[in-house]
Length: 173
Image 1 (cartoon, one colour):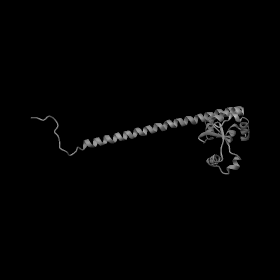
Image 2: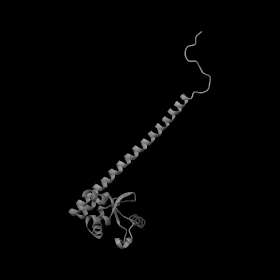
Image 3: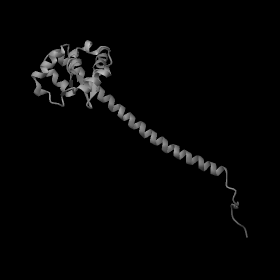
Image 4: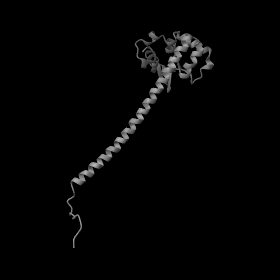
């Protein structure tokens, strides 16, 4: 149960920014139980480990959009944000455990990696389900068309046309 709660907490901290799933420095710092400033200093000291596809800084527009998504009152005072946060992709989060070098960082990283994998798995299931639903809808439409044709044929057989009747059988001389 506790493991599920941890995963839910981690998943709730994963955002979609620039088309990438990321976690923000302040959320990671909270999970690692360190100050955001300490986390960012460790990253700054190891800048070469964090290329742009591992980590990037939110621009002002992204930052404002993120703030509006989390909808808390008096956000600036509560969060103490003075600059745009750093966003870490899954690979960047993995790199953090080597930079922070604590047992807690390793344990937290394992849980974060599990959360990313769980999300990917859920998206895969959702995609497969959507594909199956689409196929079922197409099949249903085809069956509807076939059933419609069947009813038309039954209607035609039960209401013969008023044309001349032909005798059935052999004609005798």
